[in-house]
Length: 504
Image (cartoon, rainbow, N blue to C red; front, side, top):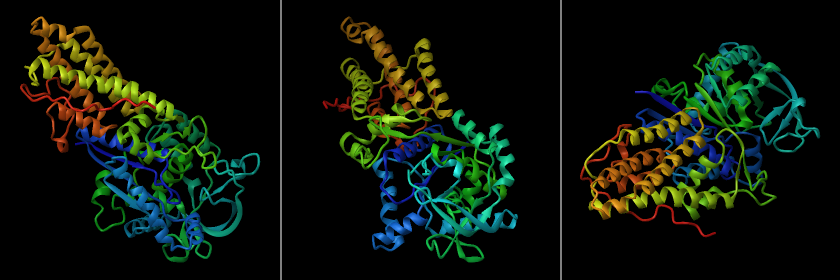
């Protein structure tokens, strides 16, 4: 049995979840569900980053205990599992004891290797990024390019990690696809960054500056900086550092880290150097997505254009939001969230195409075949066409192109609707043509296949379609790519409209 382990980046808990993280976590969930349907033993991890100056200062301003403040926002991210219908197997918090134990183990291995040393550092520190920024990376105004604020100049005694020692090895791993970076543009970007030189990185902060963090092993005057803390979640979430590392041994190396383009350097650079130092196998792939804009503009509270994913779920249902984000936002590039476009896609692709196909096929089966699956037949030309769409769908998912995968699902739906219009089953039934049985069997099987292509992105919708076809064992679903998956004589039922048209 194949193994598949997928992670999201862990968001910082100083604000509620936004549409950009919803995109990332649904991408990861789609991959996890896809692999489970194919019988792969799958583990999906997400979580939250709770340490750092920003959280400590914000909690102090709110007159709250730092942990209590972190708990409020951590709960909001944890609740996404229900809100967005996610299938994550675990949720890691960097304030948990299991995480602290694993982070200290990794630090100790790197220290014993001679890759962590103490030194003084002076540099530009952006509180928003929770990181030091080189002069060359500031914008023309001397501001952080992400937060548009001038960083503060800090000089401290910290521990450092010898990232420079591993630059050549990291570059080699990426060039040879020992660790894939997808898309190609991001692969070239990280290789260019390495070419310009990876400096050693600050790995701790003095405790008198930042009392909120994980204590550095054997030096209680310092706390770990974000790298050995937050990045280590990908292995502590599997039990690294615990008495039982069974999950870590089973699922590591990770199959895919799903991250945003703004943290590429950390995940395909710093994290990889840390793993090499600790002699832990490298990730198989780092998949990088872009940003989500709103009505053509960058989202901003001041502009009032921040898209609340929870609002869309409450008003239009979780599956329609999941579909829009996976289908309309380019998987590895920036994309726009427009309410007008959301309604257009909902009506044209979900209501008119997918919903209409399911309604037509189940209704005609009720009317002409007494709501029973007819005897199995196989029209080779028809089934080959159906599985051609499946193959293209699978190839797209495997190369982290979920948009193209869903386009192929819709092409299959279009193919089904066109087949109905060409064959005209209503005319065949009226004329007593027994060939209507074969036509409807083709369509019922096509619906079964469509349901399995829908399931990873729209789980509730996929299950509704299968339920109408008499398939109800959702716990043990596996996509068997063979024609004839429906039981002869099985009950077919017409359900409520999957996607009633929107008028707004």
